[in-house]
Figure 1: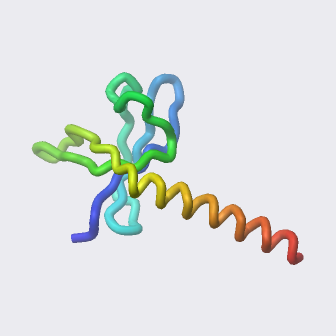
Figure 2 (figure 1 turned 120 degrees about the vertical axis):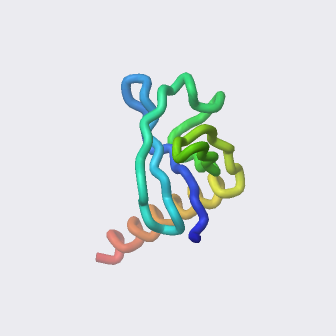
Length: 87
């Protein structure tokens, strides 16, 4: 089975949108009350999910994965800027 992770995508009207990935595939999304999110959580954070009886029960912040995903995003933006400059 591919590794699972939750990506905190956005916050709107007190509701956090979380996307569940298995490997590179999106398999589900969750909407959590922002009050249930870890302290100082912000969009872009990555979490290891914990499920109980098929329900999302807990989030475990993954500092290393968050840093890697932020770097991947920044690198992609830079590549896009370079492509625009080349055209």
